Image (cartoon, rainbow, N blue to C red):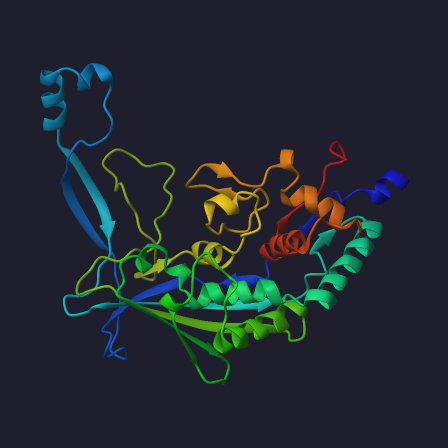
Length: 338
């Protein structure tokens, strides 16, 4: 009985506390932003060239190589671009911030639940989510959520609206992507309200975010790309995301950008790059997990100690654990693993 009481619950789940909508793409001009149109996807049929790495037997034989590159690489792809007279991309979405981090959505171990709630309550009382909320606010201000659309933009502005308050406008390039130490009054104002919602001092906080990126007339822009598992021959090789014929970005992609606040992982000293909050510090495009159980820096190693009342090495580890819980997920421990 004592062993079970000290174990992490076998059924344990947390709902996400940052809930973004999909992001919708519009075309406009920097000077006349009130004149805007929803961007639609364009289907292109193109004849591409063979550019993939060839087998050594083909690459080393000029005749075979010539025969290979003569083959038509016919493709149908989706694309999205601003109109002929438009120079600015607008991305619009809403973000709902919820409280209740001390209440798992599912937990089947009462002793563990009591221990966790004491720890969570202590964290809220001691730190009040100030560090996490500052980082979330900075990721709104710096327009990280634009992803590829941010690269090469001449100017980027983010306009934030909360209820009947005056709108807050951020010049995105004033805020760093990988350093969360510096802040200002506007960021702090937004962060304070996010923290209030996470602490449960208000039922929820709904933030309207509109980002304007001056990318150039008729330039291509980048909605989310759909994952197609059963693509047949002759089908489109790239399918972009749209909602009711309006080009859009997945809510998951926006959420990943907002939670890219982990500068506490061991290799940050060398990498100098923030990564998304994930249980194993996974960065899929690099194919690497930066927080490994072997190093005892992954979420589960830290959470199992922290939730049962043990002290972690530093406050950064506490912030990381709570940030994963804000992300949400299923974290139960199998009885075989206990």
